[in-house]
Length: 253
Length: 247
Image (cartoon, rainbow over all chains, first blue to last red; front, side, top):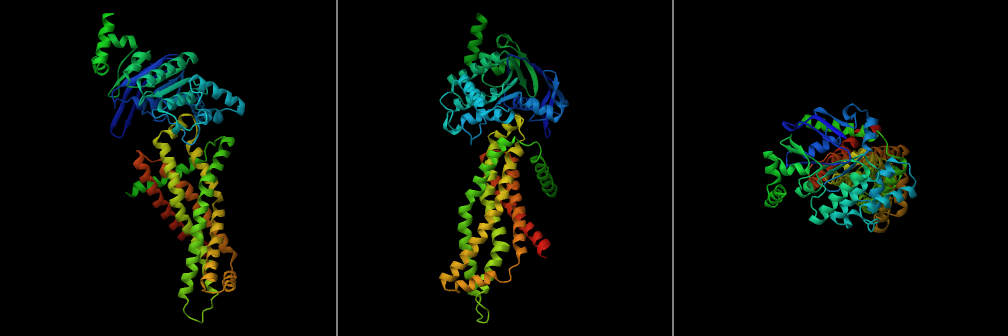
């Protein structure tokens, strides 16, 4: 579980996070949604320790990040898997080497054990044919799957995904969403996904945090998002006719 | 403006400190070092050999053409070529050329990693990205004096070829001049400079790539800025080191 308490973060004069407090639960797909500029990515990067908040605390299963020493922070980071928006695969490495990277860096496993684990996770994300290919030789959807494989290869306790569906076709998006949800359940991970893809919200949103102008404006489940009267959420989620109709259909039963 | 430059200098020295913090596992680092030796040292040999040979030849021809007084012995062409190549051409001007070749490669490769969030990915995993990216380059560039040694040899050899086959003096005269009044400390001086320039070549372009902000266009801009600053630092340090070591 990740507990965020009263996080504030500014860049120059602009205050991006204005006291956000929330809980991201273990074994659930936690989604952060909101318009562009609402502070989603900043919140995610603050959780990851890339940005340092001005005030507030972040607790990873009771461990307050800001009070950890350098070694403890490093230890915690090895428990984190991250899927970046652009996949962030290492260009000069093959798919196999990208996935093996965290194992080579943080474990003393021999080559055979690393290979076994890499084969296992690549099979888990349905990528068995791309071991020796470079990231530039595979499609965007495959790159995302490699990024997921790299994020889970070291058995993380926390999985963060920054817009995992951006630039993907609807079929691949659904595949990626389902894969993340399955992995979350299978390994009992605390998964936090930053998205503005409403399909993902409807598909896998078990705990949804809605940000508006740096503040948490609403929190609930995908079922509650159909019934909420929160004006900001309704305006954001049901801006398209398709989702309006989906909502109407849901409310009619 | 001045404060901005000073803060950049401070940031550069903090980066240097961070590079040596929390070392990457040796088994991983070993592979990175060999890769950097290949990319930075081996890949530069061709252009260094080409430039050194022909510039050595040009230095010899220019010296010969300017020795119009018949009282000045022809072996001075070899002497002047040796001194120019060993003292300045090989260590300093090859380094300025390498600031363009290696420097732009380093800045653009690290800058692209910044733009595509690969550096963030390293940091999130708990890797000291500065150590992972820059330390292997520093170690690889410890081999840079070998490149400069080859440049010295080929520069003088190019001068000998130009003289002997261009009819400016005999090969024997050139060699006799090249061996005349040889001061071994000049080689030491050249290699001290080379090692310091190697450190600049590895770290200044890395600094510009690592801390760049923006997209693809900014990667190009960062490469240009890094070339300018690396060259400026090499030329300035060349002056200071010459004054300190030979003055």
